[in-house]
Length: 296
Image 1 (cartoon, rainbow, N blue to C red):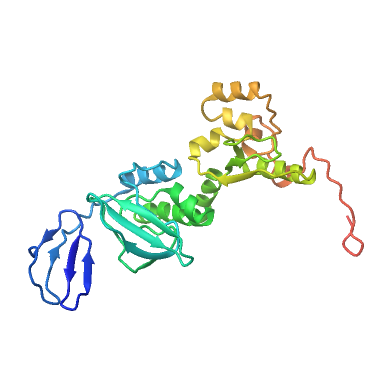
Image 2 (cartoon, helix red, strand yellow):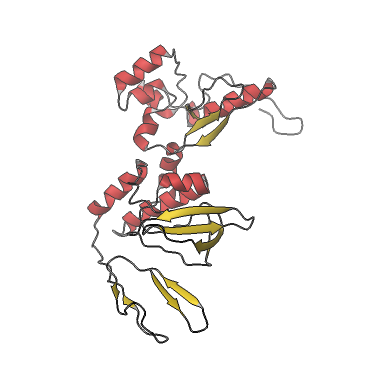
């Protein structure tokens, strides 16, 4: 960092990137608009679709970046200020309107993207690095995570002139977010730390509430597409993908049942899939006429 002190006591602070060439010496006098340092130009690497596909795989598998490479995101909306550096580690403080403050410590090699007295939003990156999808989900929620993954995947394909509708990517993300982690089991049959599908979680909570019990509390979890497929509620669907022996062993120990409610397990067994004309097959549906409506 560079510190400047004016004649009237006013101070200014500049954060420098690694390998920056400083053009002034310590204690020297500078004029307004004088060059203080020269930042090296970033080398732009040419990317093709092959180089971009690992990024798509990284997003869909929900891999966590290395701690040294991850970008620091603000967890609250607030004003940025800086504390005293500790052993070449910068101290960033974000203070919200209600007076709550969050402290972040940044290594010397990282570039800081925010300045003192700047307003930042929750989920905004304050340093350079790889943004973790798990951090976005934890701080900003599912809606922002959808936007982030769709945007990142689209960037890879648009560089090559490939157009993909957002809905296809959104369907994949919805499968990655199909499960939740139990924080408080309440009066349900769940155990704290369990990963269960949102559908099962809602059904169990509805049963508990109907009995006037305490519902379970859970948080959303982001799973990679491989793990999400193995964690399917359907035994046949999960076993047909990977780790067949493990899936069948666990299902037999837990005495699980597969009710063949989704598409994949019905395709595997050669049955009519539950869409279109097959939606109501083998289901007892009673149609009643409305008082003033059309007759069936």
